[in-house]
Length: 81
Image 1: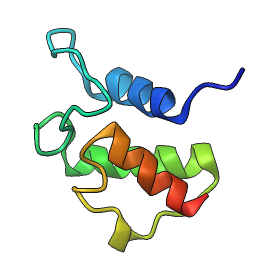
Image 2: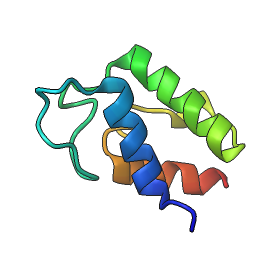
Image 3: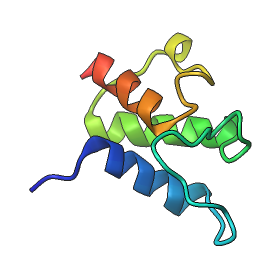
Image 4: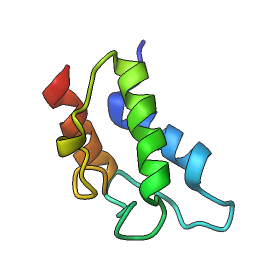
């Protein structure tokens, strides 16, 4: 069975951006406004999503708000599937 999109995104965020001392990250954890993901990391996350889901996310849509939680990232990706 294929993994849930939210779980794939969450797993990527945890593996790439979290330290062991970070609190538990959930679908609603503020990633950018909470300081977990910075602008450079957002670019790599965008690239990961584009490659994983074979989509192109326009830069105008790749806002900090769109990338602030796993839930908002999933909504963004689904717009371009």
